[in-house]
Length: 67
Image 1 (cartoon, one colour):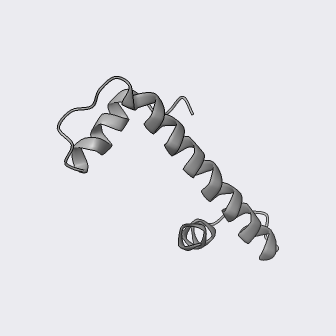
Image 2: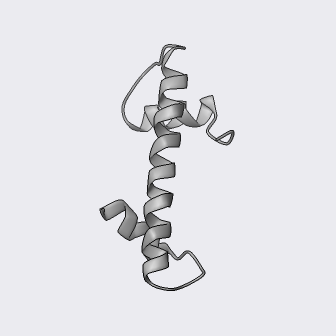
């Protein structure tokens, strides 16, 4: 999860209306985002295997978000 950097977390926070973040927030947010992405991908892979395809498609990801 090296691609989730402090600047990217700050950009997301700014879009959400947060003006500043303490330094202790970054590891917690980083871990929460990583865990959520892992959960979504694992559900998407289950959906993909149920559809009997080898390519993960955008519909699989959308359905994983709905679940």
